[in-house]
Length: 593
Image (cartoon, one colour):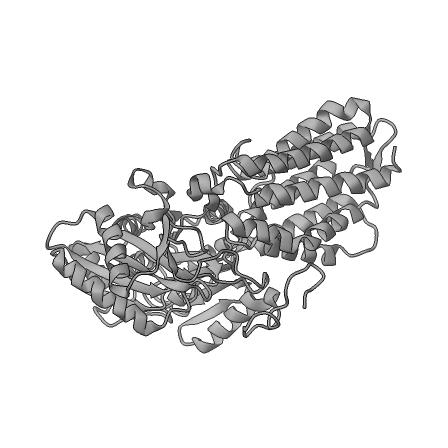
């Protein structure tokens, strides 16, 4: 059985405890907060922020993290005493919104600054940066550390490009302990950076996972094989080979980590072996037994070990290994006691820095409005009347929702398979709020922007959010626009995308669709509004198709190198849907002129 978008219904083709896939994250957070009420609570101002019951403490540095859901107990599970103070919650496998990160920063602020410790993913980088800008006018000082512990995601010479995986847990543990002991923001940032620099991680996958809203795995691992170096979203690793015995797999994982580490004999280490969701815990202990034997053979000593489901990936079969080299400072901090649903350490107690204070939710301003030029009023016919053109936005939303399964399928080939899910959710929610009664297009565009930026997250949330925000600003107060005005609206939207991301033509992103589409419209507008719209459609489709033969240079797919060639970019595909429907909906309202 399938829904209108062609997506299998959860519970029909999957054996899952799911009500509505669109509600899964919110219901997860609700149940989590109830089950661990002695340690955590939901932010009353933002349901996508989970707070520690012990924060903020006056005069203590706040610790914030965030990430996509589906990795439980990460990220929410590390909220508690002497660990993380506030967590921003994203959709499945998708970055939290900038607003959620900003609200988490506000909630964790005890007046001594906030350290945001998070993983190296495009959406997280973008939204944390925006959140820091949002809280800056409120006087909150923010420092950041980006986790880059996944050995197989980039060579050692490009460590800044590596993913953050289960090693992030050590970063949170160390940073949280330093803050609990009264460290300054500068000191917390420095030791958190030292911690993640001292960690190396690797993952091995034996079986895929399925996003409930998709209904089928977005990648495959053939029976009898394993993927070495796999990411937490199913990102391909460095090689696929025949499945080995547990001891051989453990030896392989340890060699990858230690070859990159280069640790001196006698070094003490902390070790974390985490299941990916469907691996029996007894098998994790089998792996750990061999790992510790290998560490001892290398002249290394295990100071602390953590084995279990610490950082999962829905129901993926597999495991990750993280090894952190300890010096005296890191050894002291990892022994500081902590209590959280995901990790509890019985060790050295830390006296509270200050009293837990009433959480302050300041009415902070968002990012400053862009300086967007107004589109000129229509100078003649044909022209698009804007006062009752809100239907253009809902028609675009309808096309995106209809292509939900297609977009997720494309994204699953070289990404994490959530693009169609999140796009359909955002555009669908916006369409419901805009309604069916004709209205002005500028408020409808702003409504779409608001939903994408405040509720969807990932990298597409802010990219498309600022695109439609700028489009709204460009036509606000205008009664009608002709081809010149439409061109101004397109350029405003493109500026929003380029001002938010860093993509250039040729990077295999939505820019490869958007730029040629705008250029084609401008080149043809002297021939007539409708002809320019047709030219824009053709160029958008050609731009989308051009990404098939490109190698991705940005985002998760960039780590695949040549393996990203041969597949269209999901962002370029959704951009093409948006632009072609924008052209079609406008043409219909021009009466074919």
